[in-house]
Amino acid sequence: MKDSKDSNPAPEPAVATPTVVVAGGGTAGHIEPAMALADAVLRLRPGARVVALGTERGLENQLVPARGYPLELVPPVPMPRKPTVDLLRLPGKVLNSVRRTREVLDRVGADVVVGFGGYVSLPAYLAARGRVPIVVHEANLHAGLANKVGARFAAKVVAAAAGTALPGAEVVGIPLRQSITKLDRAALRAEARRHFGLDPDAPTVLVFGGSQGARSINTAVSQAAGRFAEAGVSVLHAHGPKNTLVVQEFPGRPPYVPVPYLERMDLAYAAADLVVCRSGAMTVAEVSAVGLPAVFVPLPHGNGEQALNAGPAVEAAAALLVPDEELTSDKVAELVVPLVTDPERLSRMSAAAVGLGHREADEVLAGMVLDQAERRGR
Image 1 (tube, helix red, strand yellow):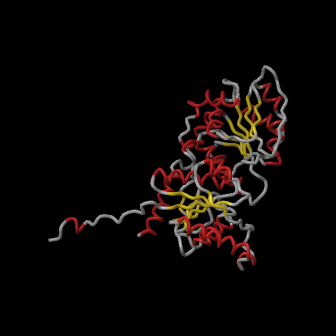
Image 2 (cartoon, helix red, strand yellow):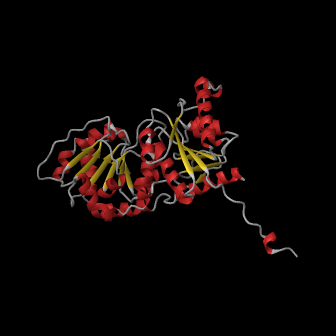
Image 3 (cartoon, helix red, strand yellow):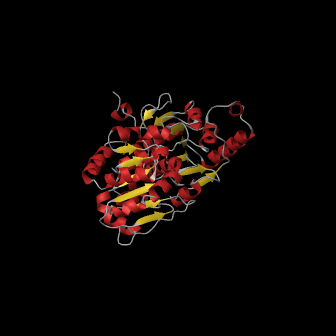
C-alpha cells in the first residue's frame, strides 16, 4: 500500500521571485491600469519584481517612477489604426524596437509580459513571442492594433467589458488603484475640500479632460462660471498642464478653483458631487467605482470608443452623455447646474454607478499573470 504522501504529492513550488514586465505607456489610460496591476502583483506575491516598459515621450516618465517602479525605455513603434504593408514587412523602426525590447526582457529576466495597448505594447509582444508568456489586456470595445497583434499569440487575453472584439477574451474589468476602489468619499469630503480650497458645504463639480486637458470642456465650463456662482456651486477644474484657464472671481460666492493637474485623484473624487469629463475607459471605470454621478463628453475623434465606454453608465442612469459639439456654456448652465443642486437625483445616480464595474479586477488579473509566470518556471 502506498504511503499517503506518495498518493498526494506536494504541488510544484511557485517561481520564487517572478519578474513581471508591464507595457502600457503613452497616456494615463494605458499607464494607470498597468500600475494598478503592479501594485496587486506585489500584494499577492511580495517577493515579485515588476518592471515597466515605456518610451521617452510618454507620460510614464513621470507616473511610473513616482509609483516606485523601475522604467525601461525602448524606441516607440508607430501605431496605424489598421494593418499596413509596412507593418507586415517589419520596417527598420519595428525591428530596432523589438531588438531593444528583447534585450530588456533578457536583462531583467522576464517571466511574463503584460500589455495594455499603445506604442510600447507592440514591440513588447513581438519581443516576447515564443520566449515569454504574454497576457493582453484590452480596455476598449474596439481593440487597438497592438492588442489585435498580441492577442494572436498571447497565453491569456482579457478585456474590460463584454463585447470586445478579441477572440477568447475573458472579462475581468479594468485594474484600478486601491485608493480608488476603497475610497470612502463621505469620510474624506471635508479633508478633500480643504485640500483644494473649496467651499466645505457647497455642491461641487469636478471637471477634467484627461491628463492633458480638453479645450472644449475647458471653454464651455469656465464660461459658465457666473452661473455656478449664482447657484452657490463650487468648481474644481483640472485644465491640463499645457493649457491656461482664467476665470472671473465672484466674491462671497463658492470658489471656482482651476488647477493644471490633479495629483490626488482620490481627494478630487471625494470633494465632488458630480463630474464633467471625457469618457476614456479608465475614467469611466474610476468614476463608476467611486459612485460619482457623471456628465460624460466623449472625445470626438478616433473610432467612437469613448461614447461606447460611457454607454453602460448612461443606460444604468448613472451618467448623462453630451456630444462634444453640443457642449456650450449655455448647455452647461442648463444641464449641469440644475443637476448638481439636486441631491435626490444625485443620490440615485450614485447608487446606480456603484453597481457598475469590477472592483477586484486588479487582483483577478494579477492572479492570472502570476499563474503564467509560474507555468513558465515549471
